[in-house]
Amino acid sequence: MTPALEIDGLVKTYQSVFGRPRAALDKLDMLVEPGQIHGFLGPNGSGKSTTLKTLLGLLRADGGHMRIFGEPVPRFQAAMAARVGAIVEAPAFFGNLTGYKTLSLLAKAGGVPRQRVGVVLDQVGLADRSEDMVRSYSLGMRQRLAVASALLKNPDLLILDEPNNGLDPAGVREMRDLLRGHAEQGKTVVISSHILAEIAQICDSVTIISRGRTVAAGPVSEVLAVADKGSYRVRVDDHQRAAQILTEAGADVSITGDHLVVHDLAEPAWVSYTLGVHDMWVRELSPVAQLEDAFLTITGSGSRGSFRPVDDSERTPQERPA
Image (cartoon, rainbow, N blue to C red; front, side, top):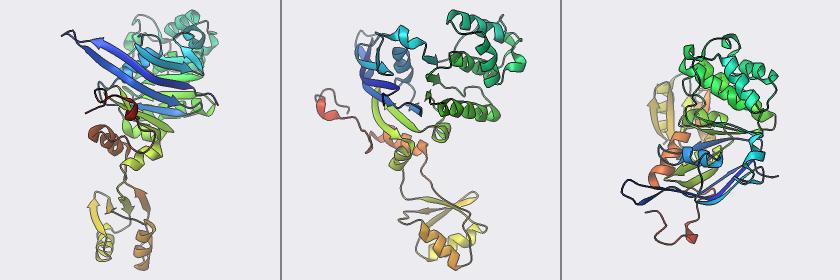
């Protein structure tokens, strides 16, 4: 099956204030399969926005190849435009227009039937505020309007930069359901975000970049495995007693808030068995590894993990990261 998005060896260089070239993107790779929700992660300044702008034709690459549904861009950028919806960074709208008028103008410019305006306003939860001026919208409402604009074409590839910006918890959940519904139609979603917990909940796979290079990519479960140190979260009715039982049985246990953590555990079923012998029933037994841990492990230590690491063997010693 043709990938929804392919980026191979993407290079983008800027001139610094001292006249020296600075590589914003240094042979970056990215692969997104169709029908997935894919997370695009990296520290501030790692090149996420530059990548998306280059992909969408807002910046010109200095090297590498990009394809959307198998078609090279920017060569076929115009042909692909009808299949792609995107927001990159904070979009700007005219404050003296209503939400409905804003989307109607965008629909007309993009050759989209006006009926889609009402559909997307309802999808993002703005139907009851569609006749209000945009200047009266909160930050979260403006973000909803931006996502609505990206959905106008019912795109096969939806690219969103920080889609939860300004949303309250209920809005975050609604956005999550909206994006899942879009993917369930066989469409592809790429989310660039720094809210790692949300990425872990919604994404099927991720690409992590640092200093303009891909440092890891793969299913979320494989990314989490990088930070998995054999620690498991355990919830029971009596944490103190459970901790004592497990400690006496030879486990390394710590109590944290409303649960306890068992460290360096080779076989998690051992916890259930050990506590069950003492008539204690486990309500939760889950790995502690979080995407935040994997993110810090990969980008902080320079580890590239065991899943699709960057191949430095083809680079000269001068090109390889320190």
